Length: 343
Length: 287
Ligand SMILES: Nc1ncnc2c1ncn2[C@@H]1O[C@H](COP(=O)(O)OP(=O)(O)O)[C@@H](O)[C@H]1O
Ligand SMILES: [Mg+2]
Image (cartoon, rainbow over all chains, first blue to last red; front, side, top):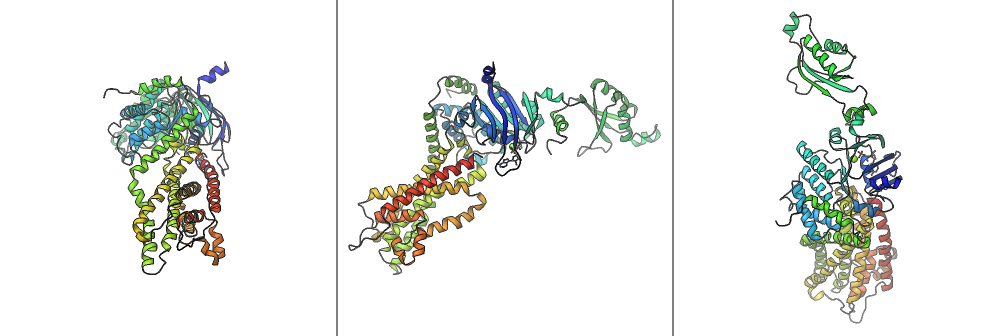
């Protein structure tokens, strides 16, 4: 039974610790997790959490201080060459071979991995096309944009058809369009059965792509679960966001008393279930000074929405936008650490 | 386009491949040769700049010291024949050494272009070995081209023994390997911001204490300096080449360091820095 489950695993990590030489703290401090074959797994955490170090150990370029890691059943310390046969890495920072043309970067990579010549030419052709680089294969990559370089690194990683693909912050600093394109390609790889481990400090990315997520901070895994289960960790269930325009001064002065944002907030706090209310800072470039946004945390979103609308219209304010949101992974992180992910 | 591989085919073909596991040694050899081929392709593409870079300085040295100075009476006519082995030795060592050092310092510090090769299915020490072999090859090519160059520059002052070509080649090969291993060690220890310092503290003393421009035996008068030169591997290269290249003039044979000492000096340098260089390389790439 035990061996059967082990066979299904692409990645097994047990009690992994890494302390860099001359460092007083552990960059990775006793983490354990495993990833099933064919799964997309995410390591989510702020800068310095130990994500890149973890990927380094799993891909044989960093030696663990202690603990055990197996990739497709092969031990990373005992048989790094065996591990390298199974994996591919797209690093956080470009490490493309500047002396080669784009297409050669792909074909040489495949050659290092023993892919026969005709096959590697055909694959390079297919992957350049798949990643939107058709016709750009003969260029030196100095002329490539950040997004193109990132796509070329993904193409390179796929040239030897790896079993496990490691992506270290794959869409960091890319424009939104390139990001969506890469997400799409990553999902396509997942559908083809490739096991994927990615790191990110972008909540949306983790939520969009990953089947399971480990939230990392200071070298520890704080929690590990599906995105939906992680969100259930945050108390207060749902979240309601209101954007409204305060009553005009003219009307207010002759009406039943001016409604300031403070009054409105007090009114909202009186709603059934006594929701917690936060006023959000004004957006940059907001066209009107009298636009206000509030966030309400409560248990029953539907009832809260109805009651909030009633209070707002009774106050004479104009409701501009109402949004019911499930908690995000961002909320989970703030809940767990008291800090914002981007800080 | 008749045959078009779809991405799916890549992953379907994989299933078939997995059923016949490849022999591990064959896999390592294939990866090693592919990495060597990459370097050949890259250097081949910039062969002319490579030649200019390594040959311009020896060319001027041969011209000024082997041709101009003897012509104006500032040096003896025979100086050219002692200088030539020194220039060959220096060119082989510096070309081999810098062929590893400079790219490696920049690569480990900034580019990390080597990462893709480190992730190939072979031991990382073989990636280092490939660098040594390839840099040694570049050193040998540069050294070999010095001969026709000298023949052209020195004219009637060109005189090289032709009865010891085997010894010349053997010493050049050993010199190139020793230079490349030294380059590997330096390249893995120096940080990018220390490159300027490296030239001043390592290359300059290496060049001037290596018996390139003077024969070792004539340093008798400056004993302490003669001893210092023995710590420089270049001394053994230049003296070995003098032994095999300088013809007797009027029955007088130039005394050189014994060939046994030459082979020992170069051999010890090669073995010691091969071990040390591979150790420091592994430490630099696997943290
Ligand atoms: N080569 C290294 N030597 C020493 N310390 C390192 C090295 N690489 C990373 N660290 C430290 O280890 C910790 C984790 O870093 P890293 O794994 O890069 O985190 P992340 O990828 O999550 O941002 C940080 O405190 C970082 O300073
Ligand atoms: Mg990182």
